Length: 112
Length: 115
Image 1 (cartoon, chains in turn cyan, green):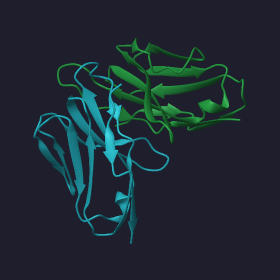
Image 2: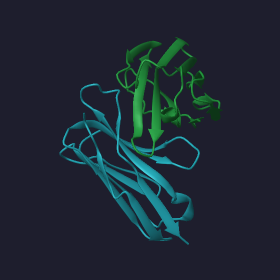
Image 3: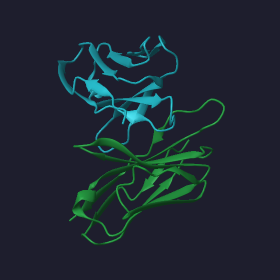
Image 4: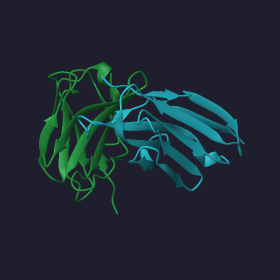
């Protein structure tokens, strides 16, 4: 089946640093989504991207839908302690569009 | 504005027992999804419904798993009999499918431990 390769798997950074993570796939996706999951909670939607090349910001977060429709990245600027958590990318394939495919997650740890 | 509501939050049961997980989707959403999350396999889609009708259950691991959606505001995921390898966090999620699909919104999950 379709898979998303999300990297890095984990990141250890200092507070204030910028963060970058990405997802790639061998298949084309219609939509890319980025979620954040805090311990004991469900994933929460951060940013949704609907068009190839689209660049969208949400506060300190910026995400882009790759031109080839096979990749997406998420950047976090000036990280703060509450950014700690697991970040997931998810892609909505062209066929079976409601069946989101999730990446394996990037675990972000921030040293104060 | 209430989100997706799942119950119970935690469930500990013995192998062989029946387990029922419950979900109330966001009001107005017409699609409902059941996911399972484990360290090894990440987030896996088990089954999803559109307008209360099961559309794709290909992710349901085996016949021990069943899901129902008797109405637009309630769904259950049942495991009978449960096994230790079923231990995971089970998430329910909902969305609107129609003109302008909405993204998926997740509940806070049910952590299931089968001993």
